[in-house]
Image 1 (cartoon, rainbow, N blue to C red):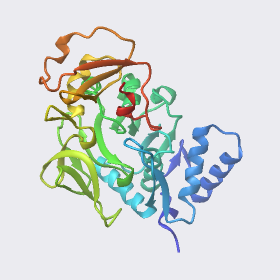
Image 2 (cartoon, one colour; image 1 turned 60 degrees about the horizontal axis):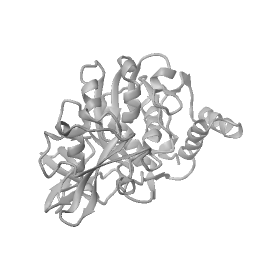
Image 3 (tube, rainbow, N blue to C red; image 1 turned 30 degrees about the vertical axis):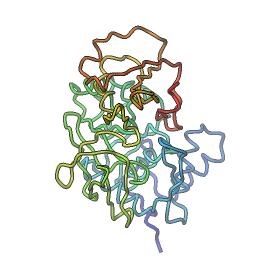
Length: 346
């Protein structure tokens, strides 16, 4: 009996070359026997994993709030997710797409699966901060993290649809993207949901869920996700949201990042959005124990110490204003590049 991963769309291409399943496996096995680059070997290894006899693939969570954990995703569920993405963003067969993220992570894996299932011409480049600089031509669909978007601003006219995930988009970068012709979406998702389950255009406030997703809130005000095609159990998140109808939500921040300062609950992500246009370096808002407030708001900047004008805090409520500013040479991050807040505060 054929497994769900046996199918390869007749229009599928890898770097403009057509492959069926057998040819793709031959390519992967040849790559693994040669002294290829780490990224090329990771891609080949995942191709072999996708076509093996297992009904699932192994992925790891990002480790944002703890040690990364291994989870198993049913291949049929991964296919459902790929098809839902194609419908939501209206990316049809023979579309030209770019894979510029590591296939060690779910976002990179899903780009390959979408191409296989939907019949895209997938072009692969080594993950870097400016992937469009090292590949020619126009693209119908590209997925990037914010750092890559920042490094690709001058080349984005070559892209029809761009989705951004992996980290919060800064207000400065959002403003730089608004005048461009490319259609840009911020995405929301996680490994457990098989990449994104919702997206929003830059000028929108609320995320809209993909068609196979149902959402609700728990007693904490956090998002609860139901995706029957993935799991019979609800996925309970730590993301505080406001719901608008059955398919839209406003993301406010992580409940585990909430700072209780003097009895007032503060969302670091909201403070960061206000400060983003005024701080030209990577930064984040965190908390530090304080004998009077319980916790005080701390601004941590990845840069050499410099003088910060009080005027940049004018739009913040008095409780939101940082009580301490710290500088550091380099943030401590997870393997996927997410800042581990508590480990970066002195």
